[in-house]
Image (tube, rainbow, N blue to C red):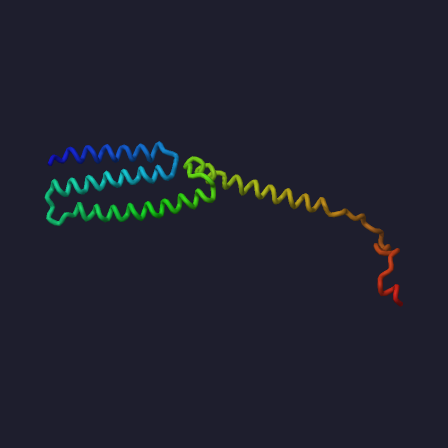
Length: 149
């Protein structure tokens, strides 16, 4: 078997995956593209293992580790994508970047809203005029204790 055939196929798979990572905006499609790239690496590992006639089959052993890492990556990646989709309603990567950049602006807006709310609550309290000394604010009213005695 010639080494060129699997190497060319692996290069095509890797380039397709790279294009998917760079051009796609859906997070699930980006994860699928990363899987294509990992499968291209696996194909190269097995092809070079066969070509070199390694007695330990180290290429195939590394391929098993790569498959295990890819499975863990997909599990964690899909969990993150589902959590983001539930919270934001979209798995679009551009919208996720936009919301991440506007967190500072949202904090500034929240601080300004809090300051406005504090000034509104201060304005809502009635203003009392200063009373001259000697005058009591409840001069014309009687308390319950005075009425019963």
